[in-house]
Amino acid sequence: MPELPEVETIVRRFRPLLEGRRITGFDTRWKKQLSPSLAAVRAGCVGRRIVRLARRGKFIVFQLDPPGCLLVHLRMSGRFEWGANCECEPGHLRAIWTFEDSERLLFCDPRKFGRVIYAPDLATATGELGVEPLSRAFTVAKLAALLRRHRRRLKPLLLDQRVIAGLGNIYTDEALFRAGLHPLTASDTLRPPQIAALHAAIRAVLREAIRYQGTTFDHAYAGGDMQHRLAVYGRKGQRCPRCGAAIRYARVGQRGTHFCPRCQPIRGRRRRLVRRGQRQTQAGAAR
Ligand SMILES: [Zn+2]
Image 1 (cartoon, rainbow, N blue to C red):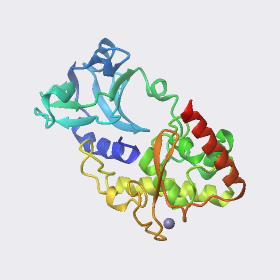
Image 2 (image 1 turned 120 degrees about the vertical axis):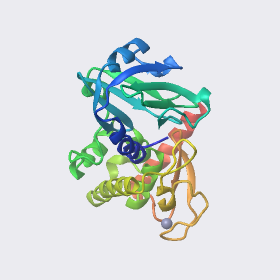
Image 3 (image 1 turned 45 degrees about the horizontal axis):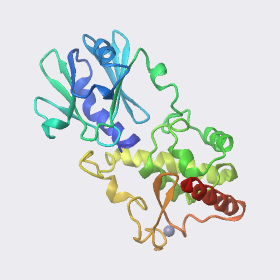
Image 4 (image 1 turned 90 degrees about the vertical axis):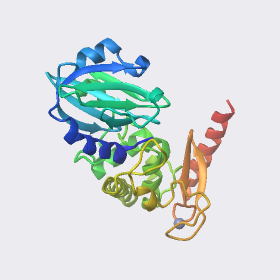
């Protein structure tokens, strides 16, 4: 699934094509992807001009004039294409925006998990989302407060979009590796230097991934180069670039997690909490 760097890359690619254009038509082949309804999405965008293309978490945001807001979440396999022809199979085309000069924006999504949402304003649409990790609001103190307040294991906490918006499986694993933190560490047990390291790691890995235009992982997202710079994600059994140990893979919650057992150790109280967490996870899985 595209995460913050991939969505940011898409927004930057499509910004020069879309900003300033007036939408003259909207059509869909799969109206279950639309929220709150086809009628609301069509009425919300047709006749309006795209004044800004932006990103919030993993959402692509169309800011419209007269004021309104269209959000697209690509989920597993969603993709934008520009122009008359779609490179994907015709059956995978889900939505089409037409502009006053007859140009078209196509939304292709083989697996149909993507979403197109209309909302009167951005705050209404994204009120549940947590802090943007590359914004000024995301300070070390802010991260420290989130880690203390939520008291969860680091991996599921960082993946929770209501806490920090934009991180997914790839960049969470990479940030935890860079910070030297085990994914099962209890969030309220981190010491100040570890919190500062995690904060720096999250921002550094996201900035680097944006610079390399994200990670190409399958046909749904192409053109990125970050896959060549990942230390642990997708590298199960391969050598850790820092210490040479074999990268481990484990399920944490429902998510596959990659880490280096030597660079990301668990110690003391954290180890006990982790053991408890593992038992809870096993008990949860057995239910
Ligand atoms: Zn290592």
